[in-house]
Image (cartoon, rainbow, N blue to C red):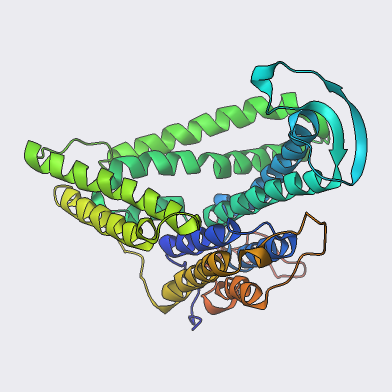
Length: 377
């Protein structure tokens, strides 16, 4: 399945894989499955990320996830509803008025409630890691080229927004290297004033260059479309998106009627696709060297779909195996079908072609210098 020559996998394939894993993670708070999903995401990123600036931004999403977990635990300790039986720490409790009956300020912290709050934060952190993996593996500018023509304006805004974090990470690394070359080795809070201003200036300059490049290529131009067709396209697209949102909610929520699940989701996807196709007919554009969609792309998307489908079905049939037992507190189970489905998400690390690497500028020790031509002064 792996290609002979290195090439970049289609960015839409990486986003499909990441969304599938994110959907799978959203169905469970089992710490073993969450840890396995995070390990799978990190493995694929380590094996298939390239040398682009956004490929080095994955660690920022991990730090963001860690911050979310800490904030979730702190909020539970301070203002969360304390439930459980095993006491961890007794804090002073403040009396609140009747209109704030659902909020408990302080009070005794129990182990069950603390674990539940922690796992809720960890689940959100792993979902953010899946999104960060897609951002690290997929080139956002190439993703813009693959979007339907009707979404070229929204796609331009999305590309600019998702490029902020990778460009910021690259700017910080470049400024730190420049400071180290000048002998400035200050770290921590002392280095913030010296790094913040150059990073801000560099980020603004790169944003202006990106805006100028996109403007020169025709992004943001207005296209004359008949009023009737514009209304039809808007109705199909908006109605399809709303139906898709209701369908996703129906798929994830086991208490909803079956009609609100998969049928509504399929109807919304079909309506959205039809609206995008009709709207894209009036947006002429050319694509230089389009990204191929071959067997590795199908395998990548299929891995994410398999992980999401197995865990969604498991959440509807046997949801208790995906939960952390808190009442009474016990050891979480390890459902083998769910484990196998998440491990399927690691296959793109081995079944996709390696990304092209940037040529190294390092001069190897012992390498002979290139002789200069005779007669050149």
